[in-house]
Length: 338
Image (cartoon, rainbow, N blue to C red):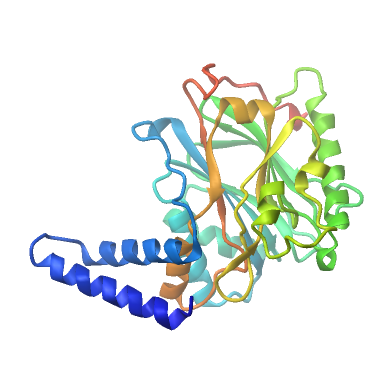
């Protein structure tokens, strides 16, 4: 739908709300935000975002993954503002917060991103190792998350080293990888080959005696799920094999929505995912999906520039109590640290 028509419809909707305001008190800023979000979702054909179960927030934690598009020392104030506002919306309402980030160019970029986190990064831990690669990965953990160990994984044949951390969050613990697979001008086989190498490392760790079986691989894979491919502009690309073909058994790829953007706003291709091990999925995952586009677009409009050429994704998981499978969540130990 043409942008001008969308603006007219927003204006008409706001006028209708102004008429209603005479008979009922409203928060104008909140009303404008809700109107924009609802209209954006309607125009884009989006389903309402999955909701976190009410009344159980103390047992929940949220993991956000975002490719922040080659963030380095020359980031403009507008880009910093867009990231800060976008992260605020992606993490809003979460008690315990974790961010897996991709495409951080250098130490300065990592420091810049850390200051855009809620609370200007106070109380957060940054796990990052700079390399000669301009597309480094990182993990940021908020208060209430213990980092048992962390570091880059130098896996031969993988262009951008994954960043690994074993995290303890309440009664839950798991190994998290922040990953950005090679794009190789859209050559899906190159991305799939790297994923197979990463999964070989993961399976070797899971095979250790007494290993923690909980793994989450988060990031930009440049591969779609089977369902996500059908929703993408690359749906007709026969060589773009679904990520499940390279993932193998014991893991599930979450997030089917397109998240990689074409042009300034629209999400075009399903590149960003959480790959979760079966036990973590069965015991701890509550909901996962793309962060509502409208939330990020509103943040960008406030800042005056685009935050990234990707939209963030989010995963909510249980950190205590009984999981979806009915079993109590319990610690396994940091086997990947040994």
